[in-house]
Image (tube, rainbow, N blue to C red; front, top):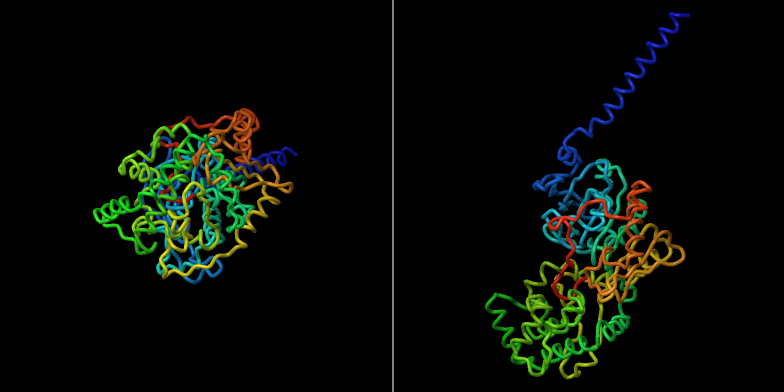
Length: 470
């Protein structure tokens, strides 16, 4: 009997030893350097690593198929960045919808959950562009599939909860990703995301501009915009000299006159997108008596006279292509400007894309996404700014949505965020983000960002894209 007991004890110790060895083996990857783990992912390669206190920051390339429906038909290198905190922390998946920054930064949800951050460059924004570029493969499903593959590759390294986020076109991107791959993310935080469901119906924007801010501020802006068109001849001479001095050309849009009017018509929209009501004092108070230079400088500061040159348009060709094929683009009225001063009005995206690139609009794309969000949204938070024009047409959640919210930050512009919400909504939004990130109940109840604010790392300024772009 004693021999049997000794044998049983020895067997128990042996099993315990094997179990311990098994745990050690399973945990071994945790001890491996994070760079080695990232580079062990098939298709992942290192561009550079940049130091930042408390983090590891990597700029990487990831091999993606040009066409996710036919992955054997060519690949391209997509640039991503990883701000590594710890594999035991949640991960935030961010995209701005344009180029990715290669400077370490932390988006608001990343600060809230004190997590890792993966940032993706949107396909077809250089250098993440297939060569040759088949523009028919630039659509919201292909881009969402890019994110899906990146998530699947990195989920093995970062196994905790994931939250996707983005601002403006990035907020749209996060929403489309959720629509096509609703099982990937544990939550979505979409900032100032436009939702142009019916491209030809834009009266919501006209109502917005008739009421935004104060009448005094609106009148100032309207007067400067009108005066810039009244003085078209002398200011276009100035524009021509400006273009010659900087080597700017106007082949894509079809001439300097078209470009001039496009910049001027962006003026009021651009002010409210990027400025606050308190900035109205910077707008000339008496446009009719202002000098040509004062009118020029005000328009240039807000709209940017380089925006519709060939050189200004070229980096944004992917955006305008998408606006003209799926996303839609706004058109507004200008009742305070005489019709004789407006020759073109808001021009369609087709005018901002080289004619060598075919385009055809798909009216069903945004309707599909809008319907899905209204009826199937789960763990989604939309944040808008009260004075942001892009919020005039926004996402909404309906009865079928679960644990999803649409909040508006009072007085804020295209830089609206959770921190700018009224107290009750701010606490609720923060708590939901923490909960979606899988953090403990006590942390969720406290509803406070877990990471201290870092002036260099935490980007809080509005994501500015010159001209009429979200």
